[in-house]
Amino acid sequence: DAKTTQPPSMDCAEGRAANLPCNHSTISGNEYVYWYRQIHSQGPQYIIHGLKNNETNEMASLIITEDRKSSTLILPHATLRDTAVYYCIVRDPAHQTGANNLFFGTGTRLTVIP
Amino acid sequence: KAGVTQTPRYLIKTRGQQVTLSCSPISGHRSVSWYQQTPGQGLQFLFEYFSETQRNKGNFPGRFSGRQFSNSRSEMNVSTLELGDSALYLCASSLDRWGNEQFFGPGTRLTVL
Image (cartoon, rainbow over all chains, first blue to last red; front, side, top):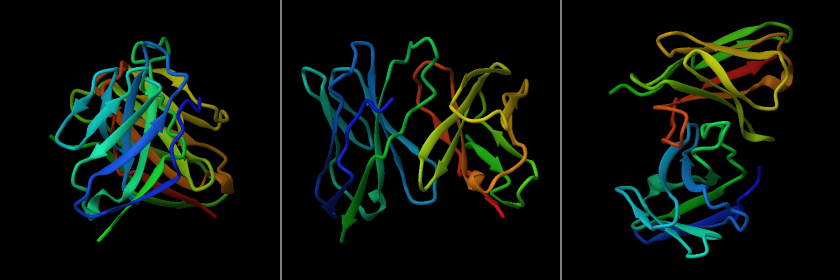
């Protein structure tokens, strides 16, 4: 199930962009890339997901390389409240077992520094 | 719209006892998934319920079970508790089973003594 590789930790200065990388070199054509984060002592929170085009929402941007083997989650202006563990997950939403049995892996612990 | 609610938030039990945790999904959501989070194993998928039927099950022993009611509310049960069952149990709801975002509750912190 460990289809993604993320750095264990990263620091980012408050107000700067946080760029969190994820490698998913074995991703299949039907698999989407999902990002969730977990702030300490809370349940995970969905951030964004995409297939091959770049995606943006009010929280973040997702940049997926053309070969889809890696992606980057961008938090444009990181705040202290963005300190969390960020999980990159690949999943086929039409998989025969459904798409809600997520494998979270170890994620990247992002620390935003004042 | 109310979020996912879980009760109780904290629970202390002793080895050998059983426990039932409850999850109320977001209104209109039909899929409920359960996860266990421990410092050693991280976030692990337990099972998913949809339309009152268990659709998926993770790699956990039969002591872990669950059910879903017609109003989509779900319960999970752990029998014959072991020390290693101490964990944060998270419930997540989703509109359906096919890739929509999951909304997580705050979790139930279970401590087994």
